[in-house]
Length: 100
Image (cartoon, rainbow, N blue to C red; front, side):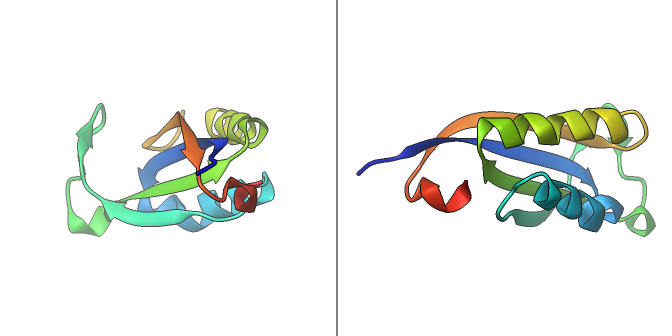
């Protein structure tokens, strides 16, 4: 079965940012996403209360160019002021043409 090389961009951030982040990645060229509620601990510690909300994980399959654009926007507008982390994996996707 043939696969298409794409990038899996994963963004983990404050739930309050979910709608804003989803608008950003769509504007930059992402065709879709998967959104899940997640918990964890990192450099900013554990979320102190339910009032603060959980974190969300946004995953999207995109071309290298779109992945670079997403990371640039996150770096410029989110990393300094919000609890947001992002990472990218190279993936081979069946029916990858749906994502570019």
